[in-house]
Figure 1 (cartoon, rainbow, N blue to C red):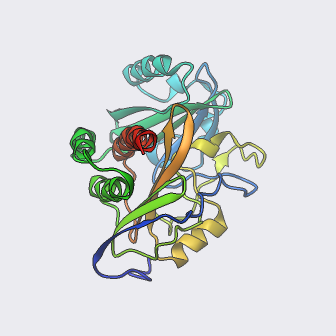
Figure 2 (cartoon, rainbow, N blue to C red):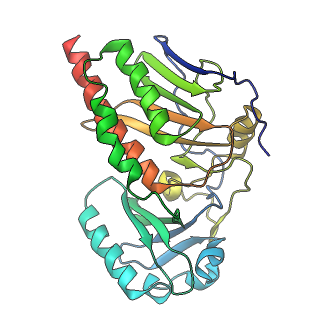
Figure 3 (cartoon, rainbow, N blue to C red):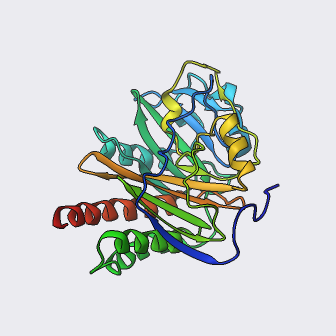
Length: 299
């Protein structure tokens, strides 16, 4: 499946590079955006009518994707689950962020799901993946301590320490942090110092898995471009596989609405998607961006 260890040395390494690293590419330029099969996607109107659904939704909800279209979501999920999700969504109103809910039972006869939703181009993107069996809250609970342990560091030492801690938090084989002209990476069996230019969505579960279309198919619809489980374009998947990358995660580094850089994590093997881990990494990135901005002003 993955090409284990291609271009990756056996020992842990940590480096800081003051040369500009290649920037992440923008969301897929392919004719049609697709979703990864590790979860499912439902595109809703603002009054929660199903507009589109990934063609694997029947694997998770037991309902054909065709059946869902132009129907209220309430027809297919439990009333309590829908009530809780809509309450959470109401608090997201006017925000550009991502709301998350964990261990939600959408139907009586299916496992619990972790769910994210966000507003994109006037539509609600609802993504769901099976909940991990244990560990809920562990990643989020560790973020504060990891950030506090960066106290007293500045410049290259701050970047290097942050890269090591992001790798410890996420468990990926390699984590790269880029901020302006500087970059730092920490790796367990890392590839080269140069950042990959292959497209990486918020969460990439398995580069060997075939992407799933979203029904009805609309090549010109870019509203799902912000989905965490959006699949990279075919050429990006090929490039990631050729580099021996099996899974990954990407996050922006932003401060007061301005993007300072990005964080990119990669592993050689496939990994089940974790919305809670992504939320913890996102929190770490937000707190780190503040520290980096303070460090810039002081120096």
